[in-house]
Length: 117
Length: 111
Image (cartoon, rainbow over the protein chains, first blue to last red):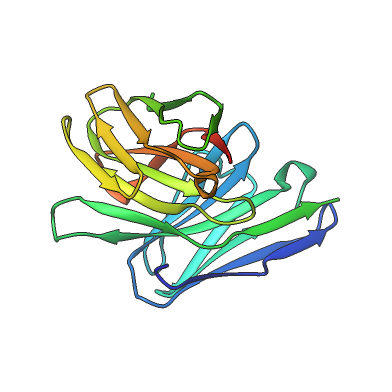
């Protein structure tokens, strides 16, 4: 399972409050990702990281920020939560198969269910 | 624009009734196509990666195939425990290994 944990696993919060979700990996993989999953939309990429302090936006990044100060931790922050951010959030890592081949496989954590009231 | 479309949205089978799930894609420079299984309340579980047209991979009752425009996940003699949502995803060339997912096919296998 690539040693990925997410915390918290469930959270209920109110509109306008800040929320931080944590993803932790134990195998020092370089690439980490945050996705959200909503009915009818599948998994959509929010942000990703390609190393410590190196991050970039995905397709649904508005309203979210990320930080990666250590290889093993990737944090997703909702600065001011809105009801439209109610979703299930998944963290993933890419395991690269062979240097320079571009071949990789993504493995997912167990998810965080966030409800914004 | 890179896009992944899965069909059908839902599929109901009797135990032992073989069938296929479809994943059609458009992507600029396919790096890889992925299949995942997802059970309710859990994260996606990696099944296969296919890298080039003509490639096939098998795992138990599942077989994935790839052409230049689509991939099929064939399920042979399914069992109730195969019931899950199956996700297809594609990865284009470029940095970051960004991956585009389809909406999934929900499979129900009745005993």
